[in-house]
Length: 448
Image 1 (tube, one colour):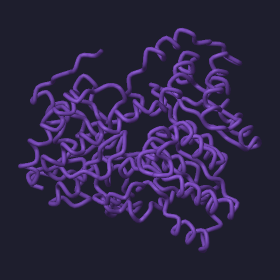
Image 2 (cartoon, helix red, strand yellow; image 1 turned 90 degrees about the horizontal axis):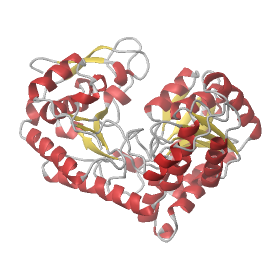
Image 3 (cartoon, helix red, strand yellow; image 1 turned 45 degrees about the horizontal axis):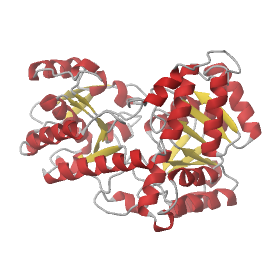
C-alpha cells in the first residue's frame, strides 16, 4: 500500500512549470493518479514477493536463471533465451546485429524505443498498419493487424531488397492497444517465408493480445490463453518481451530466438552490454519474480478484469463527452485529443495540451501519443510531419488502481469538457535528437 499524494492546485501549477510542461519531468510525490505507463508500475503478487527470497545471486549459472529460462521456453517454444534489463536492451542487442545501414524494418506499429533502436542501428522503421486502424471509431476487432497488401507492395518495389525484418507488436501500443489476429500473423509469416525474411514479435503484451483473441475470434473462444500466446510465438523466428508489462515485473525482459547462430552472436553482445547471459543485467531475485510473473500473466480471470476495467473507463469518459478510441484493449484507454481539441493543429500539440490540463485539474499524469511522441521532426528545421492521430494514453498499471480511482479520473476529465475550447496550444522549446517526448522542454503559447 502507498499513500496517494494530494498536491494543491498551486503546487501542481508550480510543479508543471518546473517540469517545463513535460509530465515526464514531474516527481512521483507531485502526482495523484499516475497513468503515464503500465511499464514496471504494476504490483507484484504474493507469489512473486516470496520468489524474491529464493534469488540465487551467482554471477554465472545461477539456479534463478534456469527457472527463468524454463518459464520463457515453456511460453515461447524458443530454445535460446537471453535475459536483458528491459525491452529496449533486447532491441538494442538484436538490431545491432541484424541491421545494416539503410535496412528497413516493417511493423504494424513500431513503438517509440523500437523505432529509436532501429534508427540507432542505421535502419529505417516503416509502419504499415491495417486500413481499419485509421478510424478511431470503427469497431473492427483487430486494428492492430499489419497491412499485408502494403507489405507485399513494399517487398515488390524498388526498396523491397532493403527490408531486413518484419515486426509484429502485440498489442499495437502506438495507436490504441489493439490486438493482432492469428490469421494476420499467419499470413505475415507466409509472406516473410516467401521472401526469406525473419518475423519477430515485440511481445510486451503477449497475454493481453492472446486474451483479446479469445474474446473476438470465434475460432479461438474455447482455447486457453497460454495456448493462443504459444501459437503466436510459434509463427515467429524470435521475440523480445519487456516483462515490465505482462510479466508483472518492475524491471526485466528477454530476447528469445530460434536460430542458434544469431543467438550466439546476440549472447556475445549481451555479455558486452547487459551482463553475463545468465543474468543479463538482472539480479537473481528479479529472475525468480519474473519466472512467477510469466505464469501469472495468462490467468484468464486477471485478464478479464483488466479488459473490463479498460472498457468501463472508456465508456465513462465517452459518456461525459471525452472521445476515445474504440474498441478498447486491456492496458490503456486512448483519448482522441485531436477530436477533443479541434481548435488545435497537430503542430500545436493537442495531446500535450490535454495532458497538461488533466494534471493541472486533478494531478493526473498521462502520456501523449501524438505529434510530440510519434511525429517526425523535419531535419531541416521545418514543421514536423504529424502523427497519424493525436492521442492521449491513459495507461492502467496492473493490480494498482480501483474503480474509485478511475471515477476520480472521469470526474476530472468531465470538468475539462466545457472549457475544452479554451485549452492552449503548446510549442517545443528544446528537444533531443531521439525520443524527444521523454525530455523535451515545452511551453504554452499565450493566446493560442
